[in-house]
Length: 65
Image (tube, rainbow, N blue to C red; front, side, top):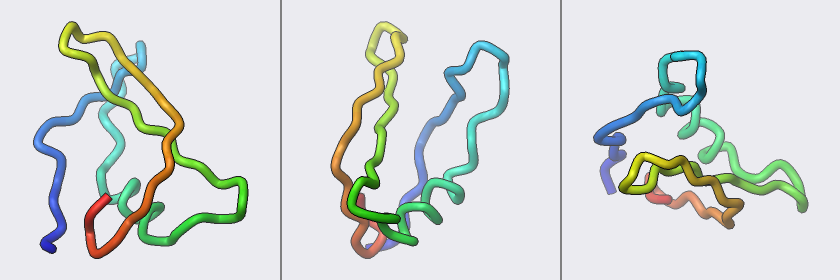
């Protein structure tokens, strides 16, 4: 599977910082979990623009999440 890139990104902080580079997230996922209590959080934006965050289980395999 070819490595895919996000189609759109924006930082949801209130300070106007640029989004974090996707390469940073990809490097963390490729390096694997750091112990039995390691977890991941998924941040998204609902259709109305409200941010949403949830703890999720994640598996990275050949460029797919």
